[in-house]
Amino acid sequence: MRLFIFGLGYAAGAIARASGWPVLATTRDGRDGTIRFDDAAAVRAGVASATHVLSSVPADEGSGDPVLARYGDSLGSRWLGYLSSTGVYGDAGGGWVDESAPIRGRRAGRNAADAAWLALGARVFRLPGIYGPGRSPIERLREGKAHRTGLTDQVFSRIHVDDIVRGVIAGFDGPAGAYNLADDLPASQDAVVSYAAALIGVAPPPIVPLDSLSPMARAFYAENRRVANGKAKRVLGWRPLYPDYRLGLRAVSAMISPTPASAAPPAASGVQR
Image 1 (cartoon, helix red, strand yellow):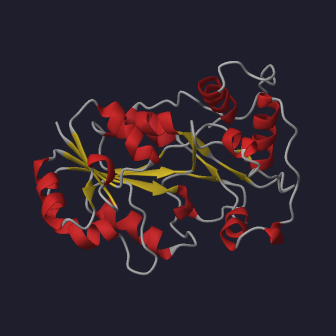
Image 2: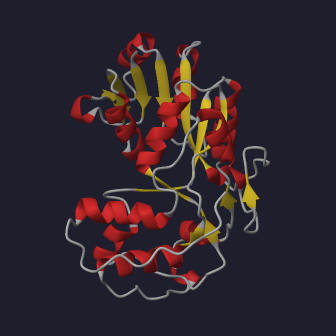
């Protein structure tokens, strides 16, 4: 088996390390032994040698999916995977969405890319907010970049990077289709940030008005949804190692701060789905 990855970013890099297979991958500039994305000859040769192809390259809102536009004709009938976003569901008013929900996200290019990979017979992994070591509220708190909004009723789902890895690897043997890889406990951003602050023994960051945030951030907070993960559990046999943000953040804290600044806050119960 050999894996070719378009876009060796945070999540795709973790998948590459965990696969146990020979891996070739692209980056924009060909750094660290990867292939430059626009090196067509090298990319096509790499794809031709692969049994499995995974793309984590986001859609360009102006020109569509760059992988399919440039290299779609080279993908053939091999295993295909695509890291998509639960943003394709758009706002659900805080309700639950599963893979049968209509695609109506605010980014037309992202919606189209998701549909295009599905039409090719790919396993499309729809991901919510990704966190893990080096990319979590804990680091943002320490860098002074975290904030609260006061929007306690605005919720969304998350996924620890290790659970993305487990889901994609389970998908190597699963049927084509869309799969939500999300934790079991959607929660507000304020709840997560406050828990992270308590975990490392710092004061919660201040509440900031929405109009002080960037347009992209304001658009994010305009959406409200809970992402159901039942299909991935049923069809792929996947189970998250970190079914809620508390367990996930405690694992992150243990990795980056072996001696916590304070005892972990008590875990509260929550509805899981």
